Amino acid sequence: MNNMTCIETETRELKKIIHDLLIKEKVYIADIASLKEQVHLLQVQLFGRSSEAKITQDDKQLSLFNFDNELPGADDADDENNPDDEIEIPAHKRKKPGRKPLPENLPRIEVEHDLTEAEKKCPCGCIKTRIGKEISEQLDIIPARMQVIRHIRYKYACKNCEGVEDDKPAVSIARMPDQLIPKSMATPGLIAHVMTAKFVDALPFYRQEKLFARMGIQIPRATMCNWAMKVSDACGIIIDLLKAELLKNHVVHIDETTLNVLNEPGRSKSYMWLYKSGSSEVPAVLYEYHASRAGDVPKAFLKNYQGVVVTDGYKGYDFLNAVESIVHAGCWAHARRKFADVIKAAGKKNPSGNAGTALKFISKLYKIEKNARENNISHEELYSIRQEESKPLIDNLKKWLDSKIEKIPPTSLLGKAVNYTIGQWNKLTPFLQDGRIPMDNNTAENAIRPFVIGRKNWLFSCTPEGARASATLYSLIETAKANKLEPYWYLKYLFEHLPEAMVVDDFKALLPHNLDNTIIQKPPG
Image (cartoon, rainbow, N blue to C red; front, side, top):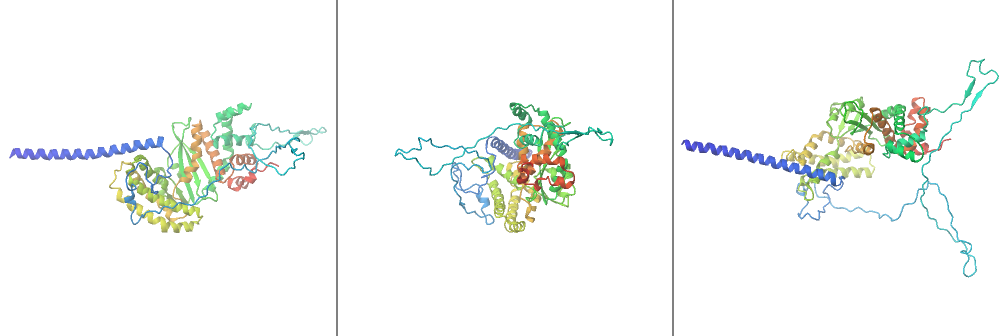
């Protein structure tokens, strides 16, 4: 009997060990699969395409090397709530080959080519008559050249009293126009050129220094840095007015990116914050430099703001959920990106049909938005369309996500995508309630891209003051571009007229939305 008891005890222990080993095996298998996904995703990010276009599987064409009989994920997506889409091939116009005509506004220099007198004589003995002409155009360029503006100020004096009687200066001299940077050799045109080259064309100051040297002019990079900081100080009131205009918008987009500032005390990484208006009527873009990524930064910026704030899923924005006067909207592009990563990591075999199903839902939502933009419908009409078409898709997607959350390992890419989307759900749905709210934060991401491109060239800022100057100049330039102004001409116009501004209305008149290219490019005088 004792032997039987021992055998039963050992059997139970063995079963428990086997059970535990099986559980560990499942965990290890899930971990290995998750790690393989991450490795493949990193390979795709390094060597594959970065575009998310065509990631979705809405087109019914399979890979040349996919021998499956059906589209991966079609079994999950093709139900009564998500029927198959019909394939439509839109009509298109074939572009005519050949180069485009040169702009009409460019000056023309005519060079005439004629036959010689001998060539004009016909073999029959008569002189040929001109019957027409053929015109062809070539594009030429005149290299940039420097010039010196010499200010000549005439002096006057009274030789009779020499100014002694009325106790005034004996010599009178013509007034020098106010300068943006007093006692500087740089004109507004030169400063605008230097700032445009760096903050539009991503040409660092040290490269510009070499370019000027080839023209025989010595302008040290330190001098150009000093110009940027002084211009930033002079434009402070313009930035304040720009911020006030931005906060009048019903929708504000926010994003942030890293910035390396060498002399920032105790910091190896700082941040450039971006705020962009959601209105197309008064576009405004504002950059702010801060050493911190904490939520206190946008909290201070949005003080007393009432409206909609669109952000990504960064937790630093969670304070917005508790502000009664603000509607916090999330970004569907980030949710879509999570599922797109699953398909990228799966490779050509693409066994992750579940991710394809989620992308189908999201793609249909974006298709509704695209059609609305193309038809230029009003916000009220867009609200109605979203209620009729987008809301059912949103509801079905939520049901699908809820059905998958318990079945998918949370550490897998698909599990992370599902959990991210559900965690952001309260911020992903406000766009249904207001036609003015966009589906994503792509507006901010597109606005911050010029800074990111510039950062790849000039790499860092030396001081916090330099970083703040960069923020000011990027704000002016990107707002000008958003208002369809040519950046160089706007900066030149601003730098010429800013010293003359006296009252608030004078400064407001210099904001980009109050100007157009016909004004800023008008020749002086």
